[in-house]
Amino acid sequence: MEITKGPIWKALLLFFFPILAGTLFQQLYNTVDAFVVGQYVGTAALAAVGGTTAVYINLLLGFFLGLSSGAGVLISQFYGANNKASLSQSVHTAIALSLVGGLIITLLGIACTNIMLILTHTPEDVVPLSRLYLTIIFSGTIPTFIYNMGSGILRAVGNSRTPLHIIIVGCVTNIALDLLFVRVLGMGVEGVAFATVICQLMSAVIVMFILLRTHEVYGVKIKDIHFSGHILREMLRIGFPAGIQSSLYTISNLIIQTKFNLFGTKTVAAWAAYGKIDAIFWMTVNAFGIAITTFAGQNAGAGQLSRIKKGMWQTLFMAT
Image (cartoon, rainbow, N blue to C red; front, top):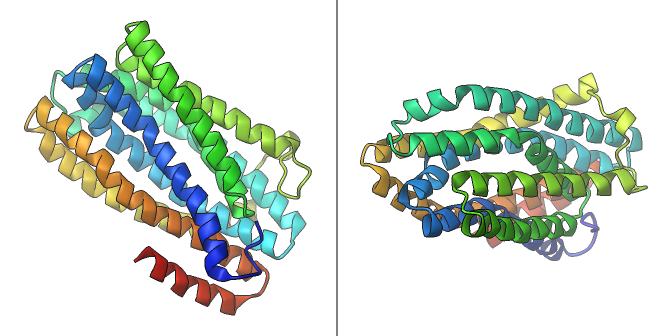
């Protein structure tokens, strides 16, 4: 999509709506997991899937997405400036970051699961289910990071529709697998966890297939996936503050979740159900943020600074 020319409001909205739809479908992953186990397994299973575990997952994923926004900013700038060499370095550094970051979170997450549940006073009857769910979900961190980074690369070059199509396919498959594993095969929280990991792996394979097959300047070559030192430093300089900012909101939710855990399983389950509704508001705001970030990056690369200022004000108007 061309976002350096034409009416600003139109470019922003055409870019925004696929992002919003994609984030809504992304939220459906955990929401469907919670609904299925709540319907067919029980209250403790709902509390395990939608309580403390969901907050920890959002904390780690949110930090990485904030960190990866540094990659999106650089890629969009280099794309707008038609700087092919730096664009390619940024894309391959971003993929390398998702691989290494995913591995680190996988190992730390699995190793620290018990400690995380104890620190948040998770109800005793929920701890075994929460531990099982988190362990399986953490094992799929690498494909989750690869999918999100790959989608971020596509959005950074103005393509917000392809990530939407991928997440729709993944979400529909996730619903089918949830019902198959839990209702038909009689599995519990491990069923919905395996379904989520399988679908995230499928989404990662699809997005990487697209990036590997494309002949565009943002295409990926396996042999070129490595860190470029100066690119990585710039990504972290931009992305680390965004990652911290994203984490702060989730940390406040984690503190609240810890207090709710003291009231028992039913309260945790009720809070989990409410959390799915509250997330819709934040996803809408976040979608506007992604849209204006990409818009600003590409226009900065193209040297159209006045267009960035106009886009910022129009985004604020639409978001309110």
